[in-house]
Length: 186
Image (cartoon, rainbow, N blue to C red; front, side, top):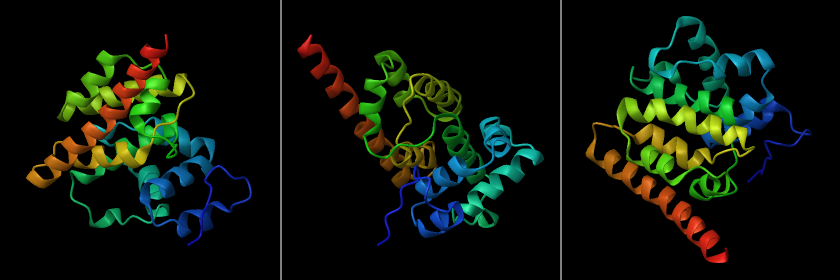
């Protein structure tokens, strides 16, 4: 298996994206290597109300990541738009658990609790705010966890709702245990 480092200056972006089978890494690698104009277009996306000019930048990014958006249902586009938007805002770091990243960035317990308990429109409105906060602290989130939550959040399928709840718990556990360890040290 080829291991690629999306932060390496040595890798060719098209080879790197094509080699990755994992869509979150591939999308993050594409966004990192994209022109500043393309990154800006993705950062300015309005995931809940995509405009035609925004759709072009999103489609290029998703296709480069090896996804096939032309076969998606209408509710899938905004989910991937939110992921691409978030990656353009805050980047991607899959080396740590998202909960630990949130705690290390100093995201307040109330904000994390709101994020993990919100659903639907409330979730999609709150997430970019949290991502901007992470970016301001120099912390890139783990999109393997966060991306899966975005894709499964508010699904009409019971199995996906259950998966989303499990992901929320997997984010909350490391967040609160990191806070507890920090408190016990002080």
